[in-house]
Image (cartoon, rainbow, N blue to C red; front, side):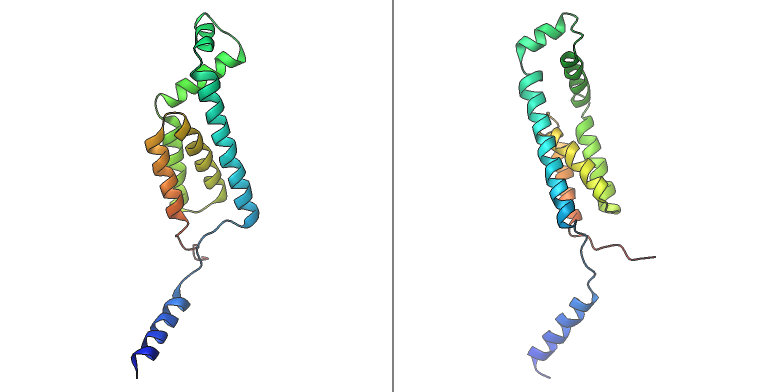
Length: 142
């Protein structure tokens, strides 16, 4: 046997043994892209239009009871203890173990908002795990 036929036989066996990778369908991918864009838009609008505006901070500091002040306080209360990053990392880890489009959506939204809202390290790790989960084979049917 020549080396060419041996390598063709070897790669043929590898191709036959490989299970398909877990990939979202085109419709799911479009929905996930829309969720990622919404998360980034939410993060940018909250950070640059609400949290970092000194006029809004001064107005909300003097017993502000408007919805804008409530949303500002909520976002600050969530990004200070790294809730966006922890939620993104948790959803990405669960998605790595058990792939699901819902977990993708949760991880994408939390990491998109977390990257913009000061939770960069954990949110970036969650995005890396999401990318890694694309290389995971589809679970075998039980």
